[in-house]
Image 1 (cartoon, rainbow, N blue to C red):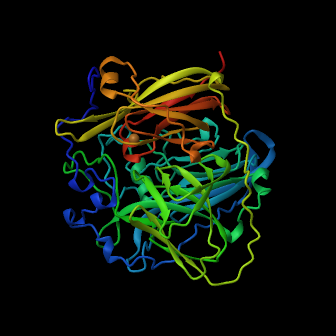
Image 2: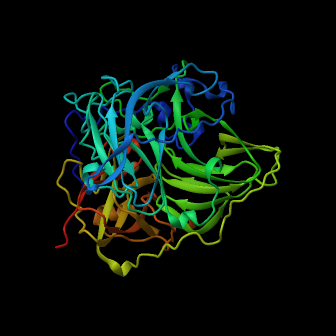
Image 3: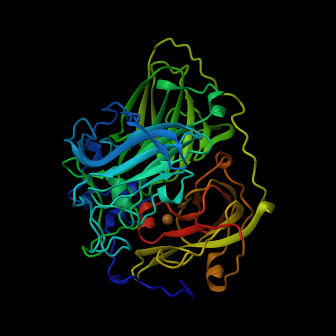
Length: 536
Ligand SMILES: [Cu+2]
């Protein structure tokens, strides 16, 4: 990149990274479905689709009460969740696969709580001493002097005190634990928890370390949305399997530098099972969809063309339901959907990602009474006025390639993780962040602690920007998508565009992080600390 000195970390050699051909350029299933190139990889065409029923993660159960860290006279529910190695079938016709799960399942148990109800979780690392996926010891935080297996848990979307937020360097090895406090003083929303350990986060989440965390509130209660067995999480992620049905994670051709720039699998999993089916009644259902993939962005649709109503996004309900035929959802984004299967008695309906099957709904012929409701108005989401921002930051998204064109490093604002903190918003202040994407791909950018709103996007001339620092726009201001008009915590920073977001930094002072949620990018420097400071 012009004008930017590229400082490679120790051990980096510009020519040393050569990516494996089966991940190159693969933003579609077909491009990444090069199983012939890897003799170890299972051909997913050999797996019968819709052979397994959709599993539902168990509900997390508290084991007692403990004093609240913010008011010891209050007793709050206490949960103890172990991360451990498990063996479970990913498909009916495959042998059990090694995975790492919270509480013994993948996804882990779903937390059910309410706005303002505090809880404590003791996250216990009972994983083996050795990792079963390929660590790249050149990555910051994953050096040879660190334990191979390290974990730290982050509640994605939680307004959480910094000591419980899962700072990536606050990892701990097997045999140790951390007890985190979640005040949940925020609106009803679909959150999720996952590992966040520095330099191996992509491997730990790929191994299975993620789960859902649902916050409800009175606003949502009044709406009579589908509840109970008519409401469920759908955690979607892609994987690659070997011929023994075990998780396969690709490596570059250089054993000393195994990191790959993106992961695109060829097996679609929902709630931990390969292209499952779900038997349902001809009525409304509520699905909390999480894209739990490392890199893949989905375009979900129902094969028969029927509509899906989106009622919520990352941080809760939209102002009103939005009819969609196709849902774009990037890694870490959530979409709260209501789908009405009435009138489709006896039909099998496939949920697809472009041309690829994700799962199948089998609508029964039962006569049912649907007492759920989908009101026209869901929740008021007042727009944050731009004039309320006391500061605008312009922050670039950067990718660096070696001489062969292979990506070797990603940065935020040309700054490495270890450099001093540069983003220090004041507590209770509002800021606008201009995310200037200088790369050719979408980066899902996530800020811890806060919820934000998407202001707009605008395409710009990036070579001129790189040369002169001048932002010359090439097109009109593009407003957010209709389904981005709710509160967000992860935004798609589109290629060659400036994506503007506005956030109020409220809740807690202290050190947090912001990062790309493409996990391969995040593990290779596309993450920065930020600090909420006392009002000056
Ligand atoms: Cu990225």
